[in-house]
Image (cartoon, rainbow, N blue to C red; front, side):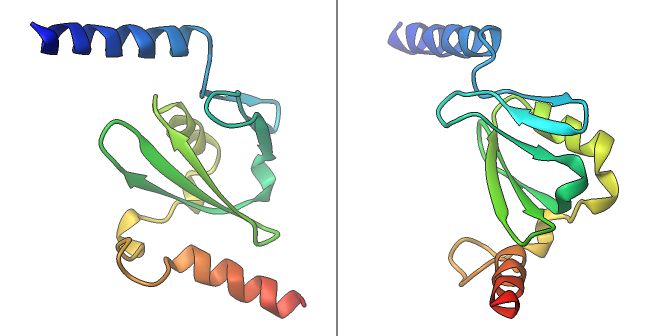
Length: 122
């Protein structure tokens, strides 16, 4: 009985968040905009994307985006809309998730590349 109530509450919560556009992404002109949800609103230029990768988790996905200035964004994609946008506008810049080491290892490939770019700039 409680399992059904819990599952129903979870589905209603997700439906409300999606309806209110909390934590969603949309393509506006040449920018990918993140609506405020659990984190602040933010946007990036599509032309600034150097590479991106998806780390699949249960219930949501973590999308790692490496920008051309060496900055790394880690955005949570609960509804799959960010991945769909990136597949449309930057599919040639996608790296497969196998390119990343597991969380128990030292650093993933994009993090070490962005760190080395930042060090070379200084």
